[in-house]
Image (cartoon, rainbow, N blue to C red; front, top):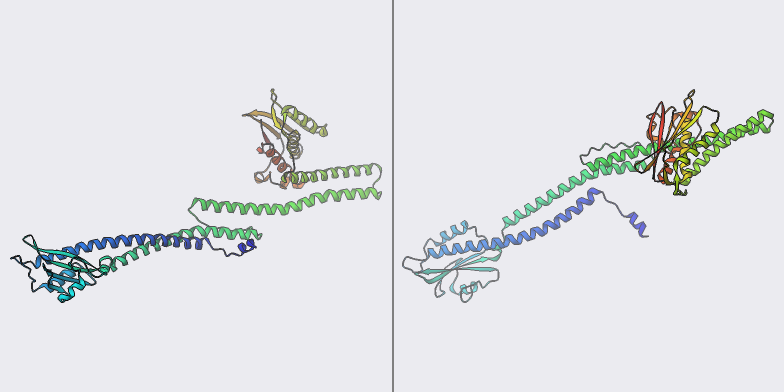
Length: 466
């Protein structure tokens, strides 16, 4: 049930997924930064405004002190105070109270009565009585004695809050968030575009359409490698699909041909169409055709068993020189009296390896058969079986003097069911010999490869660990 729910869960694109989550992270991060910055700005602004208020109070104290050391409120006090408030940029509620040394009201702005002073200041006139304001007290002194005080009552909100600063902070962080989101959006869009095209092409391939066209230009190395690898994969899948269809038809044809031939030959013998010597000749042909069909079926069974991991490979101690001599002798027996020769070139010292004699024989016999099948009409078949030892590895070379392999066919000779044009026309088979031999070589811990090929012949190399 949970699995079905997960499958029904709506999927989102990379662009939406990353941009949405990035903007959330960005907003949370900048909100924390903004709150910290706002606290710091408010604290700094409050300290700065208190110092400014102290300077204003000191100036007013100097203005109201007369030359004879008495408290004297100048007549131009109101316009002077208004100009100073504009200069120091004090906004919000502000109350200025000037009292003498006995606490008597001498001047106030806005105008207050004596009994109202106690509603603004504490009994000792040293602090604000209201919770929403803060008092800045500046003593008025003359000849070293305090003759009064200037009390500035400022709104706590005006001390710590500045609309311009808050607006600037909001614009700054809004711009940063927008720029960050735009950056991740553009990067995610650039990243998701080739991935989306690759995903769309993958859906086409899954639907059986291998002619994909990926026109993606990317400066990023990883994306460029991804697109190139996908193009190669699509091309490879297309080739494999074509080979699969052709191979299926070829396998069917190759198996059907000997069956049809055997059936026709046997019916001719049964119906007395041919008799005596000719009938024996028909039976011999039928036996050869059955042998060919048996080899093809054996190739299929061996390949399928090995691909499924059902074939066991032994690790016996072997002397390769003697094994190769025996293989060459047994293989050449059916060709006695023909223009087929197998030469062996073996080192003087014995070469030992840990391997499976049967599997090595299968590989070498397959290579010898390929060399014999590559023969050029009119040219005696010469095969060379060579053994070398170097760097702790045994190297078996099987060389022929056949027609070679064309450059177009070289990349595909180890592919399953692949058969060159020449083999398709002249030789029956399934195209599994080299594929199976390569798998056996890998299972033995070695490698089978084509060393060289030309119209003068080909050389295959089997390397095995010592």
